[in-house]
Length: 81
Image 1 (spheres, rainbow, N blue to C red):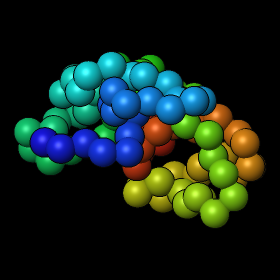
Image 2 (image 1 turned 120 degrees about the horizontal axis):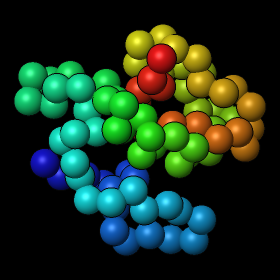
Image 3 (image 1 turned 60 degrees about the horizontal axis):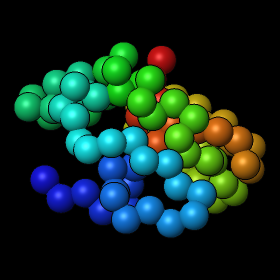
Image 4 (image 1 turned 90 degrees about the vertical axis):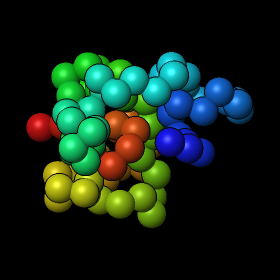
């Protein structure tokens, strides 16, 4: 897999957080195509991102994002429920 512009990048600029190298355990079933966050992934990616005006208001399941500029958010496409 190739990752670019994400929490696993090792070339970090100011204000970025390193989550560590890719770990398949972050996801429910990556081998089966299920990239919902596992409990481990939810812990790893909680409050790693910052929601900004213009970001999607919901994740890929339709779960709400913070919707407030500057609010902490989960990195990636899934907000665990």
